Length: 265
Image (cartoon, rainbow, N blue to C red; front, side, top):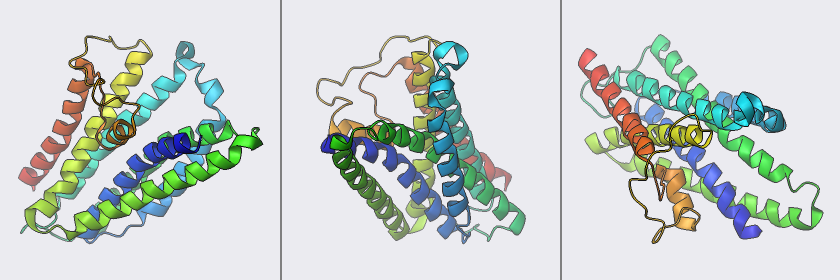
């Protein structure tokens, strides 16, 4: 039970921690304030608790596929927000580029609003699953201590990894340091759209389609490494063609947004 809690909470914490780290690095590179972080965490925590508290009734929506539809909606919303954030970042000059300029108050306010919204949506999605998981053991005192200990360890590892990503990205210089955070945002965007496609497929709202490959024999999704890769880059051992297309669409959308913003600038 201890190890299960560590892995599950780590997986849920890792995505949000990495996303926060990447946005914090971009803010630091463009001399933006990080006022969006407390607001995003607070709003996301409140929404996560509300979502978890009403999970049973929500799951009955849309002919008992409400949870899948809501999760997919959150993931698509996060993907769209990441595309918009990329535009706002590159419209003022990519970090580290010769055309970089300090964003004005209006544009800085837009970035802060979208960044806070992105974080709140990510916390809502991940935090609600953590709340539901922990809530299931509140009436089992014999298991609760192990679950809480494992959850604390998993959360600590995930947050620590986020700090590692933050300082690692800040240590990069030149064009590599400028574009790597945006590339990671692209991978996040692709991950969100791929997961949304999977959720809608499970709800029978999208066709399943054939699997493009099967790597479960040498790297199962339920393994420790498989779960970590799922959280980091959206690893699926048996992805459908629709999931892969959604992933590529997300990555392409961020790259195209960055390119168009720089051209327009």
